[in-house]
Length: 536
Image (cartoon, rainbow, N blue to C red; front, side, top):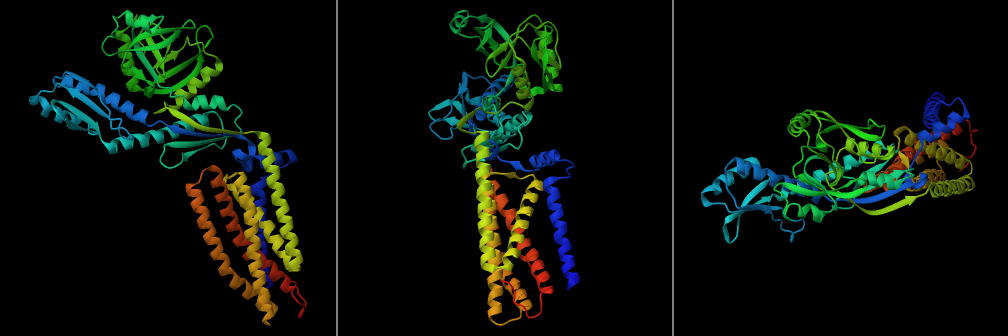
C-alpha cells in the first residue's frame, strides 16, 4: 500500500514540476522570470488592447474580373477563328441575386452559330451558350452558377490568405482572421496590441493590383480635355485613367490590356532611386519577364504607365529593354509609404475589394482593467469556495483545496504549452472550471458520507465513494466538453478562448478530483489511527 501511494505521489510531483516549468521556463533571474511569463501566457485582444474589425469581401468584384477577362479573350478567339459579329458587350442580369453574368454577342450568322458553339465548349468550359429570345442572330454566353459560386468562394479564401500575409508581415502577434456570420462573405480580424489601426486598415483593404500599361496619349489637365483631343470618343481598346503630375491631377489614355500585372511579380522591396529618394524595386517571374522584355523592346521612347488601383502612379519613358527587374519611382514616396507598398505587392493583390462593417478598439488601459477585475473575481471566488469547503467538509476540505489549486496549475501550464490565447471569456472559463472542480469534490465527499452513514468502514467508504461518483463526474464532464466543442467549432476568437479554457480545465479536473484527491485520501488513511473518524 505504501509503495503504491509513493508511486502515485511521485507521478503527481512530476506533473507539478512539468507544469511549473511550462509556465516559468528556466529563469535564472527575476527579470527573466517576468519575460518568460509574458511570452508564455498569451493575452487576447480584450485583455491587452487592440482592434476588432468586421469586414465583408466584395466577391462580386472577382466574378466581374473573370467576366471582363472572358470578354477580351472571346473577342480575340472569335477573331482568330474568323467568326464575324456585329457587337459584343456585357449583359448581366442584375434582377437576380447574386446576378447572372452574361455576355451578349450580336450579329452571328446562322451558318457560323455551330462554330461559336464549338468555340465556347472548347475554350470556355465555365460558360454556356444560349439563344436570345426573339433575336435569331444574337447569343448569350452565361457563366455557370456553379462556376460563379466557385469563383466567389476562392475569392473569399484568397482574401483571407492575403490579409493574413499582410498582417503577419506587419509583425502583429497572435492575430485572429476567420470567417464571420453565415454565408455573407464576412471576416473578423482581431489585432491585439495594434497602436495604429488606421494604417493596418489601409494596408489590408488595398487591392494593390499593379498594372504596367502603354500610354497612348497624355497627360491631359482634365478628363474633358482628354476626350476632346480624341473627338469625344476614345480609341479602340483604350481606357482613360486619372493620375497626378507635379502634384496636380492629370489624365492619360492607356492601353486597356496591361503588359504585365502584379500577378507576375515574384518580389518587391523598398529601395532608393539615383537621387536617394525612396522607391520600390520589383522582380517578375519568367513568363512575365519574357512578355515584358518583348513589350519594352518594341516600345522604346514611349511612356509606360505604372497603374495602381486604377490610378496612374507614374508614367516614365522606356529608355531600354526591361526584362525581370524594374522600379516604381517618382510617386513622392516617403520611407513609410514605400515600405507599405512593397509589403502589399509582396503579399499579392486582393482578388476583390473589402468593405468595413464595424470597428471596435480596446485600449491597453481598458484591457489591464479587465485583467484586474477578472483576477480579483477569480481570487474572490476561489477564496469563497475554499472557505466553504474547509467549514463544511473540515479536513477533507484541505484535500479539495489542494486539488483545485493543482487544477488551475495544470490549466495555465497547458495553455502555455499549446500557445492558447487567454481572453476575458477565457477567464470566465477558468472560474467555471473552479465551480466544476468543486462540484466533483462535493459529489465524491457526499458519496463517502453516505457510505459512512450506512456503517461501512472508512477505507471501504472512501473506495466506494470514488468509484460511484466517478460515473457521474464522467457524464457531466463529457456533456460539457461536447458543448465546448460546438462553441469552438462555430464561435469566433473570444468564444473559442472560452471553449479552449473550459475544455482544458475539465480534463485537468478529471485528473485532480479523481487521481490527486484519491492519493491524498489514501495517504491520510495510511497514517490514520485505527478507529479514528475521518474528518469529512
